[in-house]
Length: 305
Image (cartoon, rainbow, N blue to C red; front, side):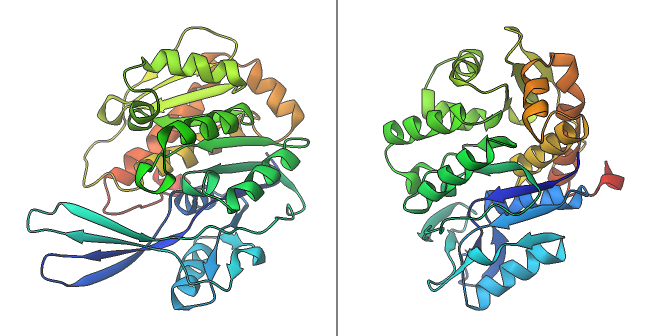
């Protein structure tokens, strides 16, 4: 696939304070992880987020640029960079406190953009979510869209309200990936296959649900059956960023297969079989398999797969 990929969503600084009061800071944010993952897989990636003109904002921007991501100028504003404070007790359990804002301005799509990915907090938190929706609708005329709900109930608010927002975004998306935890929050005890059928009915051409150690289940619009694939993780250090790494690998695989990137790709994806999308699923499992074998949200390159 030629063209540029645009990722829109939050980037923030995770501040971890241990039980002794010592602090460390790390770049975080699900969409930021996806942007880095795609760039590491040799795609041309632009990223739109909300950063302050402060030391933390510059640190995030430097991190993204170091990995080959272009940070759009609209990403910088006058408010301070968002943070998430995780306080650990003596057993390692964390409590979180967020200082988060999302006032993304109206975006001008970069020339050559053929796919837009969004998700997590930035896709539903106002006022910025309104402009995310506008960008999606503008891009759908010439490109494809992917979405990862990545539900965070403590920040996003009422699950009934969030569910309606998620389903609206599913209806605008070609590819939707969620975790089994996302589905448990949004749809309680509804079977995974039933939720996937619901999302296909809303308009998604390809849906994938990650099942942790049990791998993934996936479905395409043209087939009422589902496919399954096992995890490729050989060892697990931690699962930080695993879902984001899978998302990056999945999108990369779809792009390589010609199933992302424009009206023709959208049509091809809508007609795709389970066998057609299996290589993309495999790439997602390979990237996440590498990620969980390293500490933190590590993004592998192609030669590590």
